[in-house]
Structures are given as C-alpha cells and as structure tokens.
Length: 143
Image (cartoon, rainbow, N blue to C red):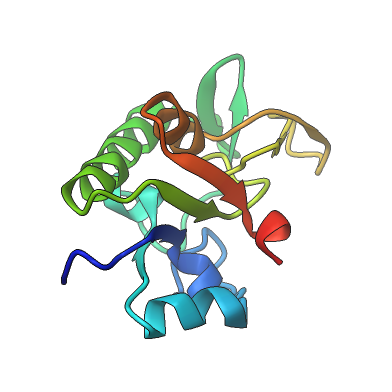
C-alpha cells in the first residue's frame, strides 16, 4: 500500500462477499477506484469480528441488534474503530459507504423493526468517520 489512496470504500460495493446475506452488490465505478489504487476496501462488520453470512442487524435505540435480538453493538463499534485507524494511517479524508447499512449508512438506516422501513440516520462507521473529519458520502451520492 502507498500514500496515494484518496478513499475508504465499503468492500461490498466492490463485489466482495462480505454482506450479511453474501449477495454481491458491485458498483463498477467504485471498484475502479480500488483497481486504480485510489481506494482501500473495508468491511467494518467483518473487521469487527462478524461472520459471513450473519443474521441481519439494524440500529434500535442506539444499539445494533440482530434479527435474533442479540446485541452486536460492540462488533460494530470495534469495526468502525478499525476503519478509522486505517483511514488515519493512510491520511484518507474521504469515504464512500453503503447507504442503509447499520455500519455505513450515510443518510438513511433501517428503523430497527426489521420491516424494511428507512429512517433518517447514519451507521456506526459513518458517524465515527464524520466525527473525525472524514468526508462521508454514500454509494448513491457517488453515482
């Protein structure tokens, strides 16, 4: 790795099988940034110790809860801290993250009822990066 990286990007946007459901959601122009060594792929949920596949998680009352009712907040916080550490190590000031994710949602997240209801909000990683002066946009804004 070198110091030419400009972005942190959600690994799931680059075709990595790291989503909770193992589905591929590649966005070609974001993957191209990685191919051109302009971006580093991260998955905060995997970095936080969660497996693939894993039970779906949503934020409810400030905690990250999976569909089985288990509190996974610590995994999400630890993963977010690792993403921040990587960004700081490479002096990266911009991130392109997956909208709606409990980690990476930039403007919208699911409401915690597992009913596919979106609400204004941000994921754990998006918030931590913003709190540390990293510009965060969603995949939807980037396209």
